[in-house]
Image (tube, rainbow, N blue to C red):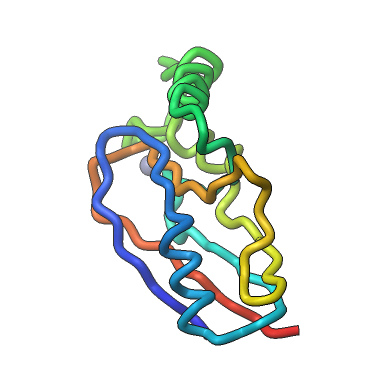
Length: 131
Ligand code: ZN
């Protein structure tokens, strides 16, 4: 089963998409398996991180900004190389186990869509495989 979701993003940010992933698992009626959450963009990514303290994701954005600033040496004509680098660092997908109809996530974990070059209309996919 493949599910597609749309997301309107701001300039930069981490968007908690765990509710959409849970919805996909519910719709699929798969009791046990795995779930791949995929981002088909080159200046955005997917990750799993803390949802309890919103300062964690804002600190991550700050750390990215300080670690990967825009550089005059960058050659890419669009001028958004820093967003491409951040996208590859996060990766384009995450995988979560489904056990007894539920995502196996830690207490403080959420699935995040990471925007590094917004605002844009974005898409992500949830693929569910029984097994
Ligand atoms: Zn680009």
